[in-house]
Amino acid sequence: MRVIGLAGWSGAGKTTLLVRLIPVLRARDLRVATLKHAHHAFDVDQPGKDSFRHREAGACEVIVSSSRRTVQIREVEEEARLPDLLRRLGPCDLAVIEGFKREAHPKLEVYRHANGRPALHPDDPRIVAVASDHPFPEAGRPVVPLDALEAVADIVLARSEPLAAVLERLESRKVQFHGAAD
Image 1 (cartoon, rainbow, N blue to C red):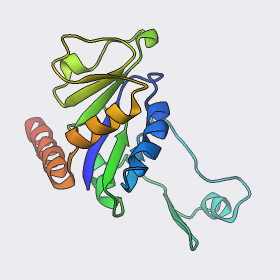
Image 2: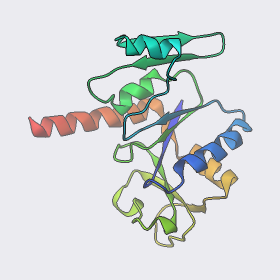
Image 3: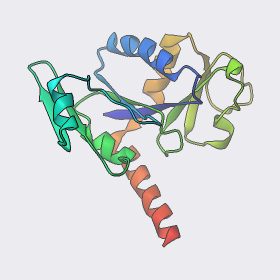
Image 4: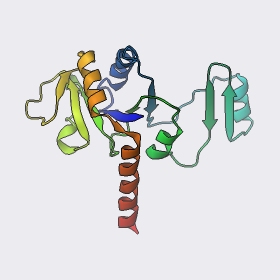
């Protein structure tokens, strides 16, 4: 499995790009998994469904399984760490992380000029390329148009890194940060 992230400010079009990119990657016979960070409380369960009623009754974890998919809903005390989430992924060729922009995995910045926010890549060496509606001639990394999906797919595949290398970097960063605070 190889790993890359999509990073950018809210409203930049990360999800839009990702849902357009997945079919391009699938057409290349790749199994693609996604991992999405949410900044707020969210619920994938529907009121009135059995699994919702189980959680509402106090279950700390609910697994719903069928012949086609499995969903696990777990109430947590603290947010899961990116390395732990990556380890939970099933077999795939490419894992694309949406969000987690401050983590140390390779990232493609999604930048939309009309968003009015500054670019992330000048301050983040882990941004390996930029998909943008704005030229960045001095970016020091590849910049492709947001709508150039084949070019974005080429960059995602070329700049993604093996899971083991990403996990090693994320874990060593955890030790550095925790060690500095102790």
